[in-house]
Image (tube, rainbow over all chains, first blue to last red):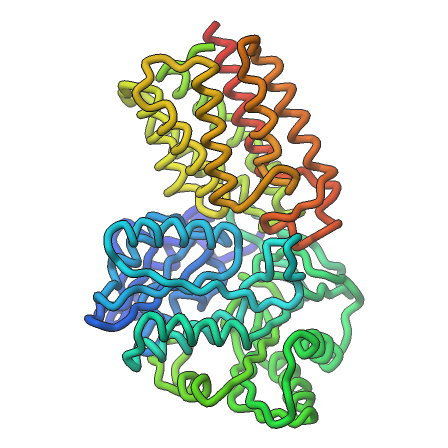
Length: 331
Length: 204
């Protein structure tokens, strides 16, 4: 393992200290926690948005804290859900009296830990609502699985729920628009190389030099198919087709596109992917409202990508276009 | 069997030793079907448990178990933290106010613990989770309880998860491909009960 770290056991704390040093005017770390909160929290009478999850997905989630997006991000250990006490601390720190809205990715641990925290907060009289993001079409959604995973589509939920809250929306309105995003967002990813959790010291899986894996999760979870590497256009087509099979788009529909890097993918390759995705969507008569290309939801140093499509109506368009001061998502 | 405060402390120390020496093994099991953090999280959590309760003074078994629960809940993370945390909290609550803990009260405590984990994880027997170890293990706490039975039952139950298809937790995404791998949570539960058996045996 070759990594720029001090001690594999202290990577999360070291990263957070460095993060706060980089954004001293807008971010703060709650004492004795791994909870990052906007410096001016709590905002009176605004619904506060809290997200979080395991670390290793930077800039998710702390990079999305700012005006018009998140109020707090709870940072767990590497690829490990944060604990209920930490989530509870974040809820208490940001509650401005209008309630706290939790954005949770659909993983067994995240759902349990955030739900336990919500129960603790409700016991203290804080109103808490939540949405569970499950945008990954690579995994089957059925009663025989835990359901689809939450991946890069989560960023659109942060943005739109955050914009609704900033515009003075009630907690019910924030919940309802967040659910609308979840219903209309789909993603699919792939990997060229695995990643190594510092404390584990070894990669989570191996891929031969000429192989790629389709459907890999953001924690190095095995995908659905392993096969010889193909061209960027073929990869873009496979991922996009799978998404379009899952959600119905009609000619004339508006769509937001995210071409997300997994951590070690050159921006050049992401733009090459986008060329094909853009062409496919335009050929179908879709109107591309906005395109985001870059590292939004990573998996350490994994090479690979995910593609996310969000079907937009007028309300979602307005909220997506609204101002955001979050360092990783400035609009 | 009869459990006292010191037995709980010994039990946790033995569990911690097993988790520390099998940390990489548990992580490799989890890399095959999950996200590869189970060994790291359990080793970190039980190390904290031992730091917390070793040498501490407790009035009752229930008090000691409550500290175990709160530490696991706040230090393990992932799915294992809330599940083991809930289990120990229910066990502690069920044993509240009891001067000594025999197999009968321990059994009803474990039943509460199992019910709590099922509710928290929305899971049931046969889904390739730690529930598949806890459920048969509980049945060994009868009047004719002996530690060897406990170990044997836990081990058999753990090994059985290998041939199961996961329908809960992250391994469920693999569908049929989860068959042939041991469930990491069942293996850590086996260490827990193996350590309990050793503790009870040593105390006799």
